[in-house]
Image 1 (cartoon, rainbow, N blue to C red):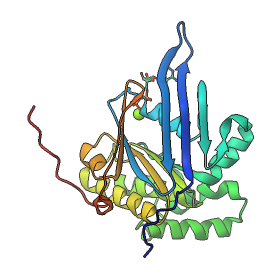
Image 2 (tube, rainbow, N blue to C red; image 1 turned 45 degrees about the horizontal axis):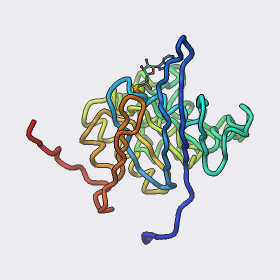
Image 3 (tube, rainbow, N blue to C red; image 1 turned 60 degrees about the horizontal axis):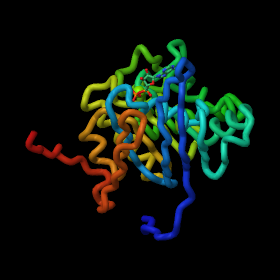
Length: 251
Ligand code: ADP
Ligand code: MG
């Protein structure tokens, strides 16, 4: 067991005055100057109405897109100074992604799908396969190694996608509505996998519509109209890992 440390942890992500616009006349401003620090080892939820800019923000956090202005710093690397190729390399090593739609390759088995997450390493096919098998065992799919996506349940597909995202052991996992296409029980299974990864040191950031799920996370950030509406933490660390009943408030 590790004991809680008061020493400052390095920032996994640092956003300063990040603006995102899409071209048009006038340009369409989606994010209006976001300031955000995510520390290494955090487990946090991003919530907000549809169209508020959550996925746009995730693309910037994940270096899939560049801001119109402002700075994004990933584990101390300021992206402004890096080339596209350098950013791609950084992303491949440091960040795993999970999306609502799974994006598994239909003709491949789970092991082959997960092993694609290691192509950037240049390791041998045998070594990639070994690591993929272990990653699948870690998400509880050791009995589904030879299945193709159409032979898996929704929850199993998403756990395969998570295994692919983390097989290279990135420090940061970004998930955009990972339970959005799943029934409640499968969704809980997926969230348990994400919590487990976080307990083992991965910084995990999850976009979700599920208020109850968000409320069970130690930090919640609300996005509204491209701005941070709230950024709240649960003081009691034992709160992490529990699921609260939703609080009923008078209308
Ligand atoms: P959320 O994930 O919170 O539902 P998004 O980040 O996907 O919201 O979208 C925020 C806003 O940005 C929406 O109004 C959407 O239509 C707009 N948007 C997203 N991508 C583009 C794009 N490539 N070009 C123009 N507008 C876009
Ligand atoms: Mg979205």
